[in-house]
Each structure stands twice: as structure tokens, then as C-alpha cells.
Image (cartoon, rainbow, N blue to C red):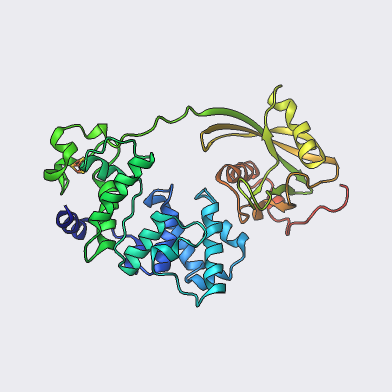
Amino acid sequence: MRRRLLAWYRHHRRDLPWRTDPTPYAVWVSEIMLQQTTVTAAVPFYERWMKRFPTLRDLAAADEEDVLRLWAGLGYYNRARNLHRAAMQIVSEGDGEIPHTVTDLMDLPGIGRYTAGAIASIAFGERVPVVDANVARVLARFFAVREEVSTADGQRILWDHAEDLTQTNNPGDLNQALMELGALVCTPTSPRCDICPIQPLCRAAQRGDMHRYPVLRERPEAVEVTEVGAAVERKGRFLILRRPKSGRMAGMWEFPHGPLRGGEPAETVAPMVKSLTGLDIHIDEPLRTIEYTFTHHQITLHVWRARATGGRVHRRSHDAHRWVALRDLMSRPMATAQRRIVEALMESAGGRQLDLLELGEESEESAPI
Ligand code: SF4
């Protein structure tokens, strides 16, 4: 299996930017980005990131807001925060060199067994395994693993098989070959056994029951949630709030919004803004309805365009707020759903309100409006 995998990988590996010069830092950044993100989606983010933070020291010296801004759109922002914290830890506690072994790597924030294994095997040649979703699928099919793959038993079996395989001179290539095979050939719904290099040895393929593996736990049903939100304008600038430094979406900027707790969405938006920010608003018109998922929630967010008419912004649920000109909103670290509100504002501005786009710097509200 090892020989077949490595030979196949040499000929079929994709030409990806982090493979050109697989420094420990490049492997690390790419592996963190690729968690919960496809290769195609991750490439432009990776290239932008490496331009802005070409070395670990550049990342360590960066401002967290800058780091989050570059990550905006990739989701799961804790990944970026942890990358940043780990870089600062390496620079402040050591000589600025990324640790070489799985054990030392796992002492860093945000680095679990998988990421540590990828960095240690690909960048440093340590004979250690990696098991991500792609590798788990290949191994579960190849060895016809009957245990549910997310259970402790299932995980142990898969990691043991992967560990056996990496006892080779090029563990990094072997790990990447398994990941690449899972991504390109042994795909979730249509495995291409006809072109698979390990097909003659694969138990599931021999039995023709590839679709039974991997054995997965049933997903909980998505919970539907309705939210209301407002793009509140004052003197050509829009109010955004920064979430607290810990918890969900920590440190990200957003428009005032919250769950609909009964009643008609249009009637609840002004009271929601009042209780969240202390501001009185006048609702002008519906701006956009945005659908997005967060963990197992399916969220429908109705957003209105509104004007501030009175009150003073308080900070009960957020740690900062700003009134920001439309042209500057996109440069703030914001989650994808929030960025879609900015896009809607830009579309509705559409040239007719160039003054809005030209209105200069943000301001922090400190006086009653
Ligand atoms: S033979 Fe088919 S099921 Fe087995 S590893 Fe290859 S693609 Fe997957």
C-alpha cells in the first residue's frame, strides 16, 4: 500500500502554493486554513496571508485585528487567533523556531494531534501519522473499519493504521498521499476505485461495499433560527459593534442584530437595537435577507436600513463600537454574513450616494446624537 501510494502521489499531486517551499511555517498556515475549508477556497487566502505575513516573526508582530481581517471569509476565527497567539509564544519564549516534534508542537495554542503530525512529518520528517476526514475515509474503506469513526475506538483504530503506514523514510509524502487520495479519488460519495492505485488491496473495494464506510454518527437536525438586524446610519456612517474578546466570534465586528423572540420581524428590530445599543432608530426600508449556517443552526437574518434618531450607545454586550463610512466597512474583520450586509449597502448606494463613500474616517460615538 505504501509503495503504491507514494508512486501515485509523485505523479498526481496537485501543484499547491504551500508545496512549492514547504517550510514549517508554510505547512502550519496551510494546514490550519485547510481545516473546514476546501483547497480551492483556501489558496487565495493563503497567498494573501503569505504576502502580508511572510514569516512567523511578521505574524507575531501583527495586530490581532489585522490578523482577523486577513482571515475574514474563512470562518472559524479561533483558528486565526490561535495561529497568532502561537506565533507570539514561539517568538517570546524561544528563538523564533517552530518546534520539530509532535509533542512540542502540541504545547502551542490551536495545534492538536493532526496539525502537529502534519507539520512534524512534512516539514521535519518525523515518522508520525495524520488522520483528517480524507485520511479517515481512505483508511476506513481500505481496512473495512466497522467502528464509528468519531468514537474513541474508531479513532484509535484509524490512528494505529496510519501510524503503521508512516514507518517509512518519507512520512511527509506518505501522509500527503493519503490526504490527496481522499481528496481526489476516494471521495465521500463517488469513490473512483477504477483509477485508485490501492484498489487491488482495498477490502471495501473487493467487497463492493465502499459506501458502507466510513461509519458515521447521524448528524443532529439543523435548528432554524430567525434573526433581525439593522444597518443604522448617522451622518453617512454606519454603526458597527465589536464582540467581546472571548466567546463566539470574539473580536469580530458586526451590525446590531439578534434573535427574533416572537412578533413580526419588522416590528421587533427597533426594540432590539434599543436594548442592544441604547439607540433610538427610524426604520427606512428592508435591506436584505441573509441565510447562513452556524454550527447546526440554519439562520435567516432580516436586515433593515435605519437612521439613528436619538439615545447614546452603551456597551453592555460589546466591547467597542464605531461609526464607519461605507467605504471603510470592508476593511474591518467581519464574518461572512456581516460582510453580505456591507455588500447590500454598497449595492444600494450604487453610485447615487457617492457622498456616503467619500465621508472620511470613522468616529467613536461619545456624545448623545
Ligand atoms: S479502492 Fe475505492 S474505496 Fe478503496 S481506497 Fe481506493 S477509491 Fe477508496
